[in-house]
Length: 294
Image 1 (cartoon, rainbow, N blue to C red):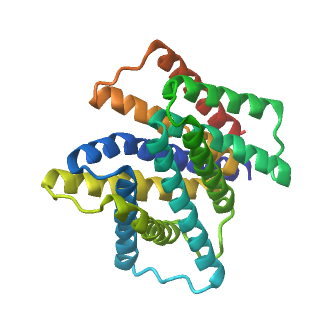
Image 2 (cartoon, rainbow, N blue to C red):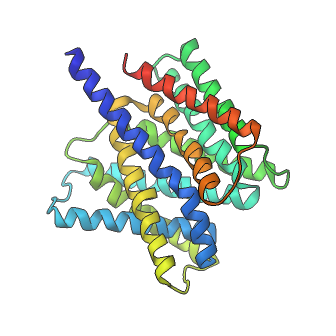
């Protein structure tokens, strides 16, 4: 029995690590797509959700996967769609009001804190000293890695980023409990597509059209496939195996991956403080992975 539990936990951890690495490509691909198309950030978000969701729906069609027939499954899909739209809209609203660093710091840095507090308050999982310390180290690592935010629009940006963090935490807690008859590919495909539909009116205000080139089209497809479809599917799959608290901490692999890719591809160098933050964040992620397998 212990071997089976260990195997399941290991599979869940692999999914979550894969999700963090896949989502971490979003920073680089998003910047490249913004440069190639001139779209606004929220329009880019709508495009990535639409492409990612439709690719998964196409996969479901090829696999001849039947549609869910119970109302609880469609209710879950609807809730996830709304949460995905809120996460994206609030995050990019925070970016527009303040800075990328502030939005990333609060959205991803506060998510595991919110999840842990909600789990503790609802009795799902006790927040002991060791877990609190690990979360603290991880969040401090993100602070050092991301750096100090700009001063302009801090309060407005922080408020919207906090909304995004709470929505991500809610998504994590809700999705940790699977719905009978509903698989993660179906959930992700329809929910992400629904999120794109909800974001379309907001994105249309700033413009959704761009001049397509082979380069920009390829970026949109890869952005939707890797950073969205694969990332969300793996994250939701890992949630059911490992649990909300561990998943929220491992999601911090995303900013670490983004920073590494930005340094490697865009030539953005990590400062000594950023390197310390990356080391602390890595240590917290490794510790979380090891603890979840005990």
